[in-house]
Length: 149
Image 1 (cartoon, one colour):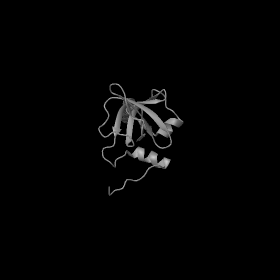
Image 2: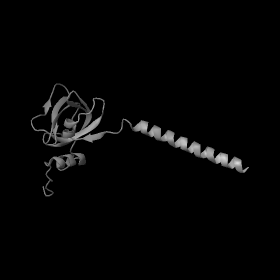
Image 3: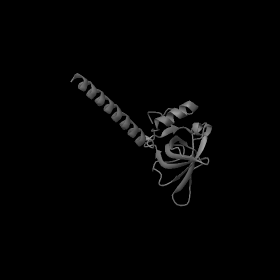
Image 4: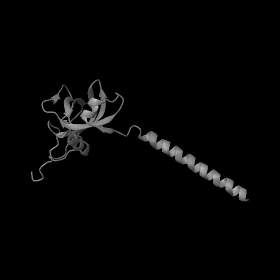
């Protein structure tokens, strides 16, 4: 009787371990496309990612580079003060999107151009994504907004 209880306990522990391993594998498999790393334009210029890697890029929309093409295609460059990366986006830009403003885009880097699937812009005059602020601070070009204005 004692041997049977010990055997059953080992079986339960093994079954729990297998269930934990399977659930961990399924969670990892489900999240493989959902994780997008943030990169600044300088990081992309230094070590360009592969064309299949989806990531986020952020910085300031470089002045004089915003070109609205035929149809819904828009091109511009995003900069962090250290490097500038050309961006192509097909779709409707957010209403508050403009030059010299912060933005974050999600997409792929192909043939020297970041092809964006999604573009996010600031939502008020002082907002800038944390990742963009950090990248601009590293470059030494970030200026704290005046809280009184």
